[in-house]
Length: 357
Image (cartoon, rainbow, N blue to C red; front, side, top):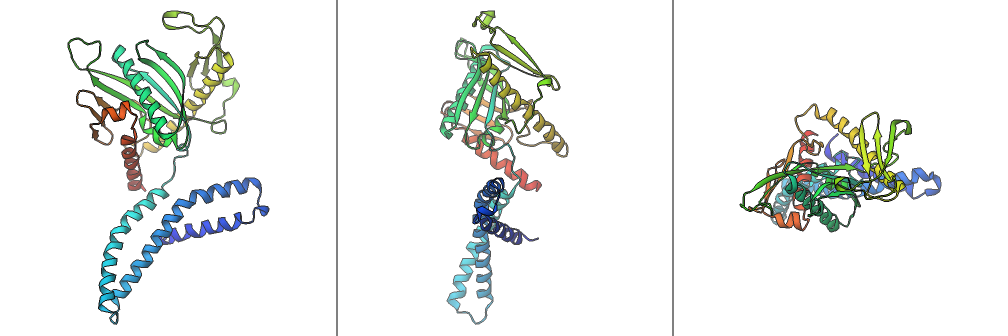
């Protein structure tokens, strides 16, 4: 089947769905919901497909005028000019449609659980962890997403040893999934009197937020421990047994939550994180199977690899996966203009998928 035939079938398919939706009384409620979503999903593709089919028609028309021996010389000249422009436009439009037709990651539209852990580098690594947390918070604000910190282990000087946040909104995981990995910072710490540049790191994990329908957790597979929450150095921060630790026995995945005074709220937050970690675990296994046929894949979730370096003395941010360097550290880290990196990462991911399709 040719590319044009595929597009014609898509246009026809949307028309068929439209016809069914015009008679809702003949549809079950669930069928109506599913068809409405399919119609909506097809909308942008069909609009671009119609644009392409129109271009194809205009190309044929121009070629016919040029080939027509009886055609007026001025008409032929106009047709030749039009043909040049149409041929320039065609490849870009074709690529745009191919990208739209790529299989979608089912998790792209989901909300996300963000986890940040300070790595090597002591207090400086924790301060960098705090920088990253605030960067993602500002990015969320820019995109109109809701950002809620679920738990945070602070150092007291603006640093973060560990933090977990929930980010909700439109296409959160699609934009945040490329952040998983080791982030490295190079700068002179405020506590450093000699002015030497230190290198430290933090690990970021972004998990698609799972819903009950995504992952089923059996009660028998859980061990739930209730204990008294404590602060830094063992200092008691709560007089009741409200902290919750949940262990998923089949995988060994453990989640601990103690930020809330209510045991019920801590358990609710812990289950939310556990569900997302289990969903991510299943996705990782599926990714590993697919990735065995190729050496690397952007967004595969491999967190052992350094993905980005933030060099403060040079005001430089380098994403090592796509060899992109920007001298805009203030805009990215302080202001949260993360799309400067995210958009090229998405484009690179699409290009890889196109090459593999």
